[in-house]
Length: 289
Image 1 (cartoon, helix red, strand yellow):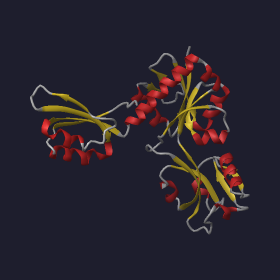
Image 2: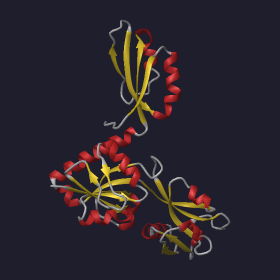
Image 3: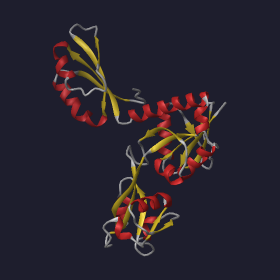
Image 4: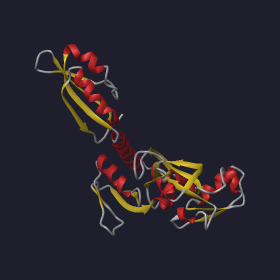
């Protein structure tokens, strides 16, 4: 038996392959191929655009796939959401669908777009948002390069953004956030009812979450004299409690823990000042709670 897995082709592809690698799954694909090889004989993978993924999972063509919450909403797909993975093209953060207008536009809020024209790739989610706000506007599908259509072709756009840099570069400003989206692992509902496939999916999701958890954390270990142990431990914002073990050298212990990578540059000098020696920082592949 094999698990049919859909992997996102396009902007999420590289970050997804990296995440799978840290989870223990080596994915390789030729330059023009859409069928990657996976170092797991029970997984059969195919590259699919994220925009289409939920439809193929819903229909059962795929047992499992990774796509954004935004495209599940856009397609109205009835799938089982296994887990939420907060990563995107450029970092570990959600992306947003926003309504943006030209910097020189008079529009300040979505209600100002009554009767106006909006271009977007997310037609359904844009229409749903406008309906919720009681705004009637013309929403047209955009085939890409949506940012350059304002103000000559349309009055506003509804576009996905991670950092907002592309919008700013095209002299656009955001007036509304329509939807915040993260990557989801989704399963076909019949596949989820199959005991073998469900267990396979759960194990894969566990490892992916562990790999993602490890992205912003590092391991730190050091040697500490007994009389300075409490002072050193007090500095450690451990994931749980640090591991402490006796050394062969009398009066010394080894301390090991996991911390957020962003604090390490401030933490290490403090540890050193409290008597810690032989401090080692090392990367992590997975952190499983």
